[in-house]
Image 1 (cartoon, rainbow, N blue to C red):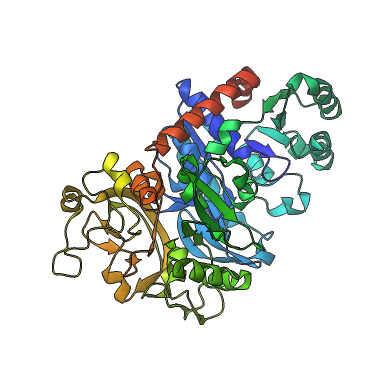
Image 2: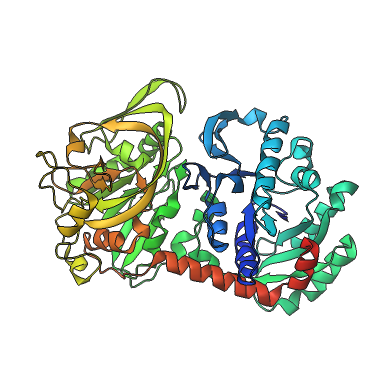
Length: 525
């Protein structure tokens, strides 16, 4: 079990790298995190949802993600509570005041999921949450030492030297843990070191001297980690710093207060002709953006109000008046409509609020949650003479709505295969939302699924569009079409291959800097 001295010390990436490292050695490995808290989630093939980090770790193991890899998921939707997902399904909300209460039932669920994974794996690498040194939470803990004790898991503790005080963090954990929990820790890792690790040899000796724990190694700053999907909003800070000065087409993403699944846009960061800018609170949306992307959110109504409090609604409407383009995904799509209603109080107090009014649709929140993988073709932006080739670059400035609407609303509903023959660009992704969106604007859909049904809406002038599907930019042909539509030259890079290569790179670095034989012994392999 990989535990940390705090949040964002690099546990998720280390687990992913170790999963790939041992998988390359021929070991059947599975990732596990009993309880995660993140609004970046992934859909499993069985129609459940788990934390994005565990889906990435499954990819590192060359296996499909399952709900057993993350049986308890908390998705914060306000300052006071979170949506509770158990084995992939929404079961209600958890009030913040109840976060530290008795969770024995959830621990039982976690143990059952762990044992189910263990039936088919030789090695399970478990990721902790936060820090075991938060001893005020120990009594009802199911994510760190509570789980380690219940399952007899040996622990490796990770400290983050990049944020400083790593010696105090590791030694302090040793001091505050009780004897039984302290005995579970078999070694430590110092993570995110910049420079020559030999310069910290004395620091490592001091940690060993104070704790008695052996050092497993010092991990350098992993450049490849920036090419991996982020788990939560903590990783949004600094995302704009790596942009190339030569980028010429700007895409702006308002950083909503409950932003969710923003890893949707990671593939755009790979485009050399695109500058992707996440705009934090307190700053206006850039006037020179070619496209504003409104992301998903865990609380659409609250973030619609947040948009207005920041003045971003004014920025978006001005952008459209001046001929700019807007694309909303999931909650962002709901915001583009006329109204958003929550009559049953699913996201908070029952109410109805005005949307941006850029699409002729209305949304009503419902108790059922759509969770499924989907595929089909783009209707709102497509290649004219082929898919994925040079012609993609000629999807011109006619707007995101430049596409084949012939037959839509005119008596013909084609299949995905038919659309592909007439130039529809294929996509794949997933739905993860509550709420139903209907209205006249839906007669101009943005997507057609492979079963012939449609999703989303496009404005009459083609410059504003929205849909419920996440992951569109991860498909090379779809990303090329959408990038071309705003006047940029697409790279045609394979995003999935880039992520896989990054996992291999992380694994190779860990192989060189960690005492793998010690990890093998700790794991009992």
